[in-house]
Image (cartoon, rainbow, N blue to C red; front, side):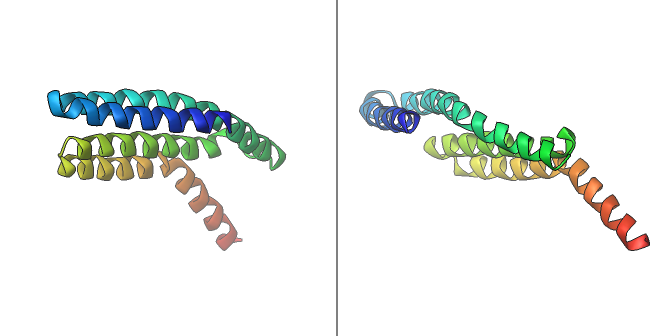
Amino acid sequence: MDQVLKIVAIGILACILGVTVKKEYPVGTLLVSLAAAVVILIFTISLLRPVKEFIDELARTAELSPSVLAPLYKSLGIAIVTRVASEACEDAKEKAFGVYIEIAGAVAALYVSLPLLSAVFKLVSSYLQS
């Protein structure tokens, strides 16, 4: 809960600073936004560690290979990075670039999921042939 309050405080402070800077230095708003995003993501990563440990424990219990979960983690990272970049583009009044980044992120998430999709396909195929 303490981490969430810090994240909210950073977000509100960045918002206030961005609005204040906007009149004198419009590009500064984007810089404030990106800096706040980096700091917030650092705090957020610390919140994800216990979740990752829990998922890893479930995988060990189910005797799943770590390579099965790797696409999940990669896709999550891609989603976070592309969302932040897309929002930064929208803040800079370049919505089209944000859309392009989101499309690229979706394709990249699908790409990193190919090994998992391939494993599922092989498993289903083996059951159908049995």
